[in-house]
Image (cartoon, rainbow, N blue to C red):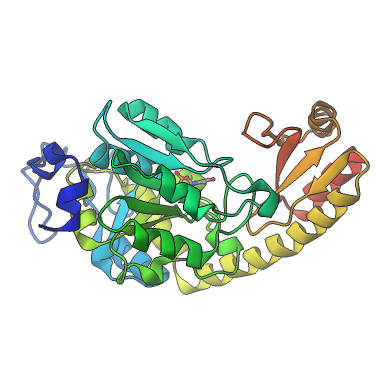
Length: 351
Ligand SMILES: *Cc1c(COP(=O)(O)O)cnc(C)c1O
């Protein structure tokens, strides 16, 4: 038996998946009840009258190369949001199993758990040690009901990378007991290569990546799970058969050509420059008590009067995020690093 047989929901392991229409570009399609003509509004390359390729091979290969993992370790989804949902559905039986999260962190992990009827175990990050992982506390809360851990690195909304050694140690000590999922939505902004290179050695570790942030494609809805091939195969049974739309496929393939990747890399550098300017300037604003250093494309700041900070930003035509409801983030706001003009405008509004 594989480690997965012990952890995943038995009914998902036993599930016979939907058989989608056969994919064979050599043959003409009279097997999927599509129309033979394009819509007049259809400007796609392939034609939207046809269902797209399920888990499109070319995109999987491109992302496998980008993230430096074998193609069989890549599952494509409509953003990491969908991947999270699939993981919770595959591992957590309603009213029995739980996910573990480390607040203050991204809210979607708990939402996915609640939708599935799974419990949520919370083990706070160590706020006094720059929001680092408390490994012993996490392990102490990993009862047999905890099937999944969601860690976020760099963490949203605190902005810090989690320590690689700590995450690896946690995954090793939880082998056979739970799957450790690391959400690397912001990893490109950190300069760290991330954890995907440890997947081969550590099957109980999985990594979520997305094109929404560093690749400027939030509107295209495309993300990936990088994981052991047996887990990718299991989740393929659950995912909607045509999850990645043809327009998304075409725009993402285009965005991953060498010329476009060069531009993306230059943009990461400007965000990093603006991030340090914004963080240092925010820290000097009288109404700001503290602005944390960040490995992502946003800065967490603690305000003297958060309501006043939010109001000033809005009066300048800018939305920033109120994160006061996150545990331990009293008086805090999260500011996305914008372009140079936007950042200057925000700083002026707060002076
Ligand atoms: C923005 C963000 C994502 C990206 O989600 P997509 O569904 O891929 O757009 C994932 N995780 C975190 C923590 C985020 O902040």
